[in-house]
Image (cartoon, one colour):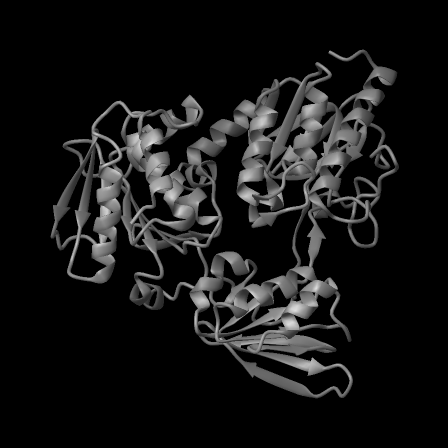
Length: 518
């Protein structure tokens, strides 16, 4: 099942384990069971510490297997083959059960172990989803650390009946104790925050007690990470408050234009950003959403949604942007029920179905091309009279027989009952209304800056972007900004990183001209 190269790599990883590992597999007579057994035999052969135990236990999905310490049964369970992006989730589960310590702060591990209650998670994934492994790996770690936590990864392609029964139209989708818990990418900290409310209050009190920073960065994407590195290297007290470290990069599949990095994936790039920042003396405060900016004579205050507040001599705003909504009836009602924003993650769930893509820029055309290889038919709906994507992408799109392009069309409604069943649009030339029967709509119409919380505090453009000068300075002295949230043109990762470095240098220059740095 596993090729020679993968088996060699797996054997190398498992050399880091020190404790016995039991893989208990539940099988039936299906082809999927045979494939799973073949893969697990390869895994067991990769280390003398791994024992494979076959079972016909009817209490679990078939085929599935759990990774346990000897004598225990609450280890992470995988229903369906954990290949593709999920193979890493399997490797990490083996390592952690085998005694290799996870790269997680001790305080978080203690928080997991102290959770009071019984939690049984089920997370539905597709093997092409680049956000799913983060959720699977977080839940696996929790199950390994706390015997009252159980988790199962369910590969949607193998368990199509469950996908239909639970009306799952986006991944990852998480159930807790049989009830919908969340959908989309969630970090370990986010999951903990949802099930341990007291933890949020404890963290808010810790944040409130912090001394003022020389530089406080709000936002943890490429701009914020670069600003943190440059500020910390100046030897000044640096903090970074982020709703989710990595920002929009976490939702990006392929990155091929960051100079010196030939190609990578968004989540890997985000992890590299965080590792680089943690290399320096930077106080990282994750899962912190900013609520208000309050300029002051000597210190600037940033108030957080948690109720805590932070103060600093200078502030760098790098809150980035998010996917723009089409804002028509049905969009909010059918999110994750046919309305999606990530074709790479959710595309496989629409195999053999009819879908639409709204947007004719690079993102929209790339989405249509990707989906055309999976779904029955793609209808691309563009508001303008022409596509705005690069010509090379347009040529590829025009070569696909199962794609229809409708231009000069205004989407007016996404329809459905319990899930999406169609889309209506108006011909902008004739004013006529048309309807397209389909089962999924992928929205790809650009970005909107995350700056609503700054209205009235500093100057924003008519598009809501933070107005900055050539040094990253905003209209408020001591407050700088960088990245996709600003008026700087061309929203690109490499430009955001450069802007972050520039803003940090601007903030340091402001400090040395107005006060002695700490």
